[in-house]
Each structure stands twice: as C-alpha cells, then as structure tokens.
Image (cartoon, rainbow, N blue to C red):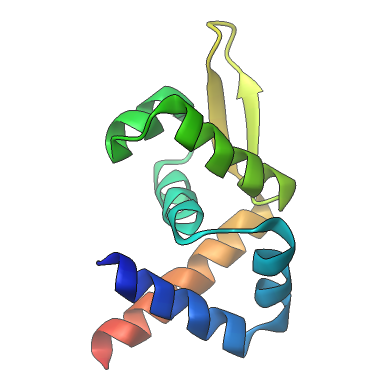
Length: 110
C-alpha cells in the first residue's frame, strides 16, 4: 500500500471518528506510526530493533514514532535487559489498528 493510500485512509478515519481524529491531532500521529502500530499488532511482542530492521528505519526515527504511539497510549515498551526495548500494542492501540485495517479494506474494495 502506498503512502498516498495510507494518508487517504488516515483522512477517512479523521472524518469518520472524532476520537481517532482527536488522538491523531493531539499526539501528532503520522502515517508511519499507524503502519508501525499495525505491524506490532500483527507480531504481538517485538523488539524495537527488529521493527527498525523491518522498515529500514534508523533507531532514532523509530524511537520518535514509538514515543508518539506511547504518548497516545497505543503502544507500550519495556526494557528487555539488553539495552533494547520490547514493544507491544495496548488494547486501545489494537482498536485503532483494527479501525485502520477496516478502513484500508474498504479503500481496497473501492
């Protein structure tokens, strides 16, 4: 799915769901963040270094996305003792990812 399609899905979510729109605006959630959230939901628990590898991001880019998602209470992180964090989606994060995936499915069918 292209970045343009993700932006359109994000716009539709903002238009159709005030709570998602407020959260996106308040926390500065970006398209990249929602894509990361979706991957984390699909993977369950995943090391942040693995996420960086999957996307080809530097750790600093991934850290900024994680910080926005954690601030929005969509993601939680904990140290695994090896100076890296393990991330997982919160219940709220899973709900947002499901809404995003549903909006993406509707967009694909159109």
